[in-house]
Length: 309
Ligand code: NCD
Image (tube, rainbow, N blue to C red):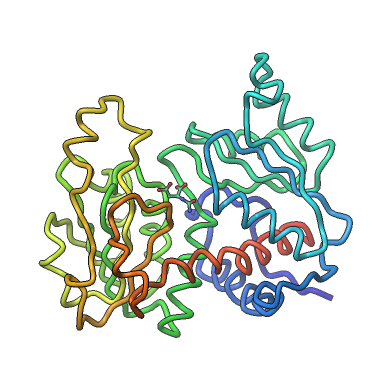
């Protein structure tokens, strides 16, 4: 009998979590990691179906949700190409979501509009998971990011973490910054070009907590002191002016030379474009591929927790 102390019915924003909820998911993921590693299948969610509503491109998030459901003994159905669905005929998200509700036990949604997963969670009676809403939030990515940090350091408290790149449009860094306010003695460094700074709303969230943060433009100013370099790509698809994107593209490149002899790990939600040189891939600094693997035990934990509630 699973004793649930997890309080949420849906996963919409990391701001809905307290530390206990986060640790619950991370601890469940630890228990499921062996199945993910040995590529076995258990029966925890046998007979259950995940509905995947992906209105924006996705590789890791979608594949890892699908793999997670399969490893739990369940199955999935989904939309990945809106052109193949009735959305292209003008069907509303609400009607599409109602169909998914009728066919599935849990829904995962990625959409370019902020707030869509919240809207869907208000109109359906099955759990809803936000897999990224525009430049808003990406809470399940944050859970696997925290899992990766905890696995590497044994703790999340007392770390100095640099978030680098497109802090304006990158939803992964928004959720991660919010989540880190729940931990103790964290120092955050926001490294970005002037035009891609962390949004004011997130800074206001941080200002209401004890977390220490600093905004800067040059990675060299913190490279010697940080434990984690969390690198992100410039989010080309969110720019209205391609010229602006081209000006900023390539602003930060992490290569082996930059991090040699430093005491840190390099993370990235992926996909990477050019922000991490491939010469980092075969070094012990590279934790971004392990991070992508960690998506499976963490998403297994999320699905199991929500569906079993
Ligand atoms: C991220 C996303 O979609 O927000 N990718 C992911 O889910 N692993 C990061 C990105 O697209 O840059």
